[in-house]
Image (cartoon, rainbow, N blue to C red; front, side):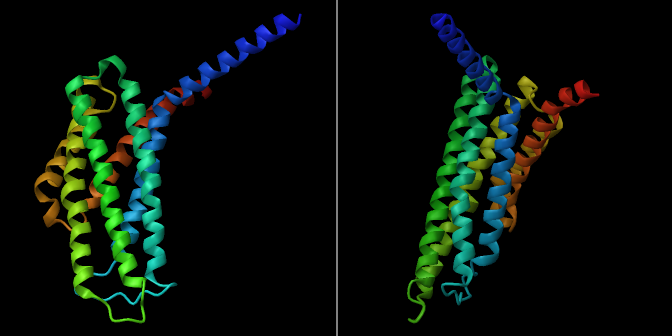
Length: 234
């Protein structure tokens, strides 16, 4: 009897593990990760946009000034990055054998490079914040802030944005060939990717394009995944 009970317990644990793995592999996991990434990165970028001063301005940021808002935004970036990695991983697992090696390499590589550039831009913004608030009683070094401001802007608006455009191209192409997302979203991805590749530096709010497109794609995946459940309930 004890042996039978132990065997039954092991079988039950294995079944529960399989169920957990199946849940993690569903499109719902990718959708939730994509939505979480989109919301967090949108909040972080908007906070930075409205808290970091322009090059020709001086931020009077003390311990309770704009530095706290900037710090909050910078702390949200790593969490958004983890959600984006989860989004990539679950999508690749969902595609499985249908995933083309060429587009898989571009898809994964551009996503990782986007995160790398995003983290670098956040790190430079953090250094700029330290330069602004480390010694508020002393004269502010405008030249240092201008250099850091331009470096963070280039990392985000040039390098990270271009990698985001490549990610949108590859994701849209995979969506067209595998039908894991509707063609209108894929076509919109192509159009927005071209916009980011050739016009991001001329459009002030171009950094919002990528997270909004990921939010749209993730929302569709979530709704499409929940649709059978709604029909079953009805």
